[in-house]
Image 1 (spheres, rainbow, N blue to C red):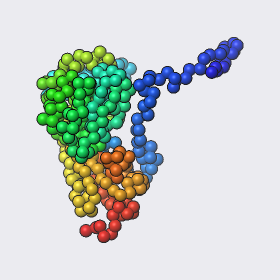
Image 2: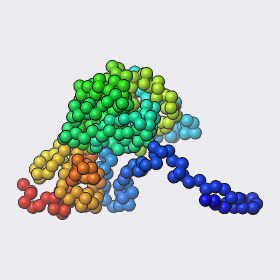
Image 3: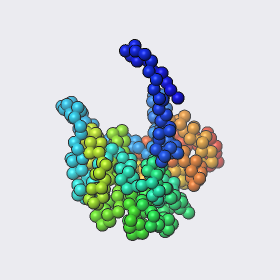
Image 4: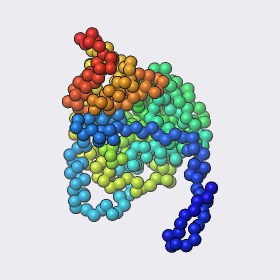
Amino acid sequence: MTAKIKDRTNMNLKVITTFNPADNVSEYVRNIAPYDAVSSLTKIMSRTQITHYKLDWNEATVPPSPKVKESLLEYLSSSNGLNWYPPLFSPDLREKLSHYVGLTTDNVVVTNGSDDSLELLMKTFLDPGDRVVTPYPTYAHALLFARSRGANIVKVVYPDVFKADVDKLIASITPRTKMVYLVNPNNPTGAFLNRKDVERVLQHAPNAIVVVDEAYFEFCGETMAGLVEKYENVVVTRTFSKAFALAALRIGYLMAHPNVVTQLKRIYNPKSVNTLAQIAACSALDDLQYYDEYVAEVTRGKQMVADYCAEKGLEFRNTRANYVLIKVPYVLKTVKELEREGIYVRDRSHIPQLRGFFRFNLGTTQQAEEILRRMDKVFHRTGVLKAEDDH
């Protein structure tokens, strides 16, 4: 095809060849559907007359530590640094992180969210045709990054989707496996692999990169970070988006053996993490007590939901993360009605192993009380619960 464009200098019409983006997309991207990023934020902003509970993306339900706001305001009021590129390689944050995780700064790479860590790993280590083994269902965006590299995804479905089966996972690893991707605890099922299990995976995949995604570490409390000193083929990723309440600033990090870090630096962009995110993350690490208290509140909130479901006879799945799952007979109707009440949850029923389940994260116990009050109202309205179900 051709298109005519009028020259702004009033010269004759020019004829140019029309560029068709679809014909020029990488063959490995062409068949990938866009990531299903459905957010409730627009709906929340359109109904400001009620208090909303945004529980669909496993974000924190409270603002970050007051120290974060103080440090950001101080920087913005006293510096003209916004016209400069950020500190390269995030040196101050890497120093604080080395103390937080118990490793050296040579083990730490700061990224623009943990998604950026995952994409960096896959760009560095995956070639077309490589095999990536992962439990399934799991965090879908990571698999999209792998597919965009032309990798083949080997999905391991556990017999009990809520319980990790390390033997089945290992059975799927072959000499052709280039990467193993483990969200630990897994999203959305909560399945967890302990250190012994992860070491078994590492030993059965000596030629593969084993990525342990610890997005929910602060809630879980158990980490594989120490393994990077023992194994060169393990990488642990984390984020400040969950417990640290900095999702809007997009900051995360990975931990790996220095030899792995050296390879990542081939394509790592040292100016990719903005200055405000670096400042905020540093301040968050200066107030761990604030976050410890929040994590404790989340744990109590999850127990409140567990007790409620036990009382009402509802199937409930707890996790070592900040989210839980509830199974109901009318999930689509229930999710829609919860939305009307200002409660936004994530319907997981499209996943065959999670039929009837919706997932949501918890926050403080005060928030949990109000969430349960509204949920109870919806459960009765939709027929999930009947009057005789109340004890």
